[in-house]
Length: 373
Image 1 (cartoon, rainbow, N blue to C red):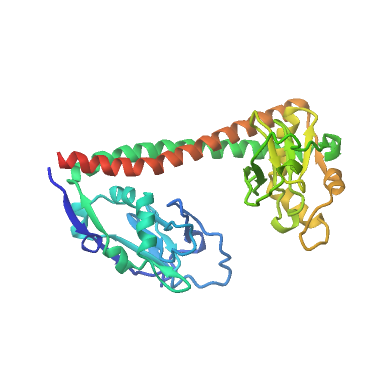
Image 2: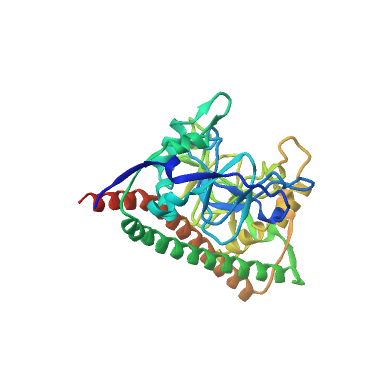
């Protein structure tokens, strides 16, 4: 077997067809993440004409040419579905041409794109002033070494099998969330509503002994994350012990969400002294409270009732006075178990996606080595 070297411009063609007849509506408009995935747009498309949006047909690639503000990554995705989508005319859409389809599989090309090496290449070859762009002409100049098509098919099949497994796992994740949300909706009909403060008590234990040497924050996804803030005095930070809840009440109004998280690890976590730390009456109640405050409607209500300040902060007594439904013990336990299962599976799903990303350069290298023997 032998390797053949091509420029992508020899194998691809740009797609410029637009939605001129308005055959596709706003529900077909997609965005592209730096994780190389298509997702529904978050843009407000009310009163926006979609006639200039570019068609992203099946087996085509789409990417954002602007690479300067995407964390050294290029937002690029492959439409592996049977649906046609719409992308902003600021995006570039291309597909394999007739000659390219005889030399290259779309799935193999996507593996090639889905590597950090290609992200670095795209950033290095982007150019401009305020905004650097990776034009289709730059994409056309990319040189790619290709093994025979049967070797490509073999390695693409490995990737597709792993991708199908991850998507199946993710679908189960959605089902768990739906079941949990349905139970929480039923809780709103509960006759018993009680203030949050009846089931939470504030604790304030400082990192005085230097037990934790790393600080954490909380994002609006209800997760602990490494803090971006630097501090020379972590000894003043608060400790969140396993099973305890931390909440950043300073930004409820800004984010229309409660940045709140429960420490599910076996170790203490240090958070800013500005955070509030709570101990729930029991483990199931802690998870139930987290599930309740994870609902978008609760975040919006928090935005509505928060203090009138520049930061949109919420006073701790107001937070503790918020009323919530208290169902029977069996329902609380069921919601806690569903929510815990959801969190566990969500973390595994993130790991599966990371494995998919990591396996791409290995598969590409393996296919080239096999063809070189």
